[in-house]
Image (cartoon, rainbow, N blue to C red; front, side, top):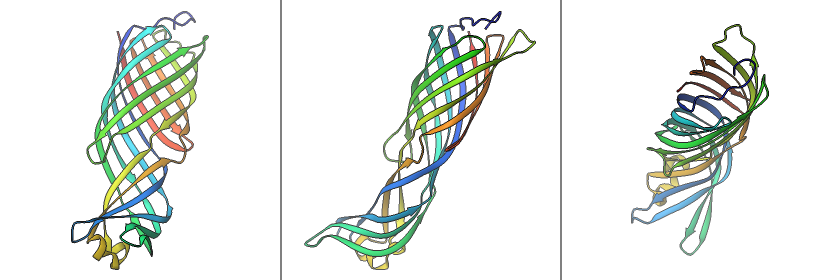
Length: 263
């Protein structure tokens, strides 16, 4: 932005950013796998579940980027993710599946599954930002897609981010400084799976003869809400340095900070 008009950004950039968030999830498809003394695998599923499940992540990114057009930026994502899932489940009854002769069999028991599952792994992805406006107003739409390979979970984590924002340039007396504040929203698709181990006697002592002393459990979590609200500000210094801060609220609590260099 120069002389009350938007100027074309420098074509190349390198950005560093981080994101931390926490939100509520719903756990579903709880499965338990054990093994009899003869080596036969036995499976069960939770019947009725009451819960309060939360999860959160901390992500750090490096984003090389290029402006293909004055209004269109594309970027790569290279980084690292660490997170934790806290399933706090009260299970009322389990169903043992496919037993010989009798098939599925219901066990009237109650137990609590309260665990903290931590994971970390490398993250890769890509994204694009579309921006346009009439000074002092600006409208931005960002989309990016990431894949994380966690070391402590089965499979990979696939995330979609979509964020429309409405910005306003604040007046400053410093010609080398542009300040833009914005409000917006973010859609974040971050469904995950979780696994862990449980002592079978905690489920029901009589199941030890069927499942063994230890059993594996697994399940999936889905976010209660995918959308939240955003508020943020960025500082463009000498049209070379970009510093930004962003906060999310309503449905998902998050914070993000970053720095970018344009050349």
